Image (cartoon, rainbow, N blue to C red; front, side, top):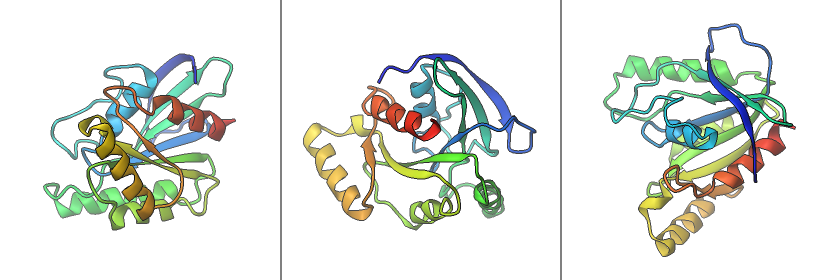
Length: 192
């Protein structure tokens, strides 16, 4: 799908007063590739900062995306969860932040739940899906880092993940662009 981006820029955190727009939220474990995926979708290398050290994102970051002939929306980058080297009190504060973000959020249109294609889905992913139940949002599981597997391994892992979690699932590689068009299709359906 050909989507033309007019502008994409950092807009602030959950604490800032932002205009009301549809929201597409990117959630997942630390180091799953949220920042890389957002950058790949927006055709930017460093709009969303990436790090080799998981757990750097501490706030909910909003990126305003203005599209040509389509509505504007926010790409929302949630802090990663499940990284053991982050102190427990920091993990707890992230959890509270996420709960506050999801509770009654009527602007939320799409949850892109990122999982590393090489890993199992765990309780945290299932709990994250449950957080959108009171919103109009649809959930799509994005299996990231698909370029790390060959085609037959990727197919087997996708079947395994699909058995764990029936529903829409997309294999993705921010590096190769695999799945980007399909993700854009789902974003445009969600925001229009």
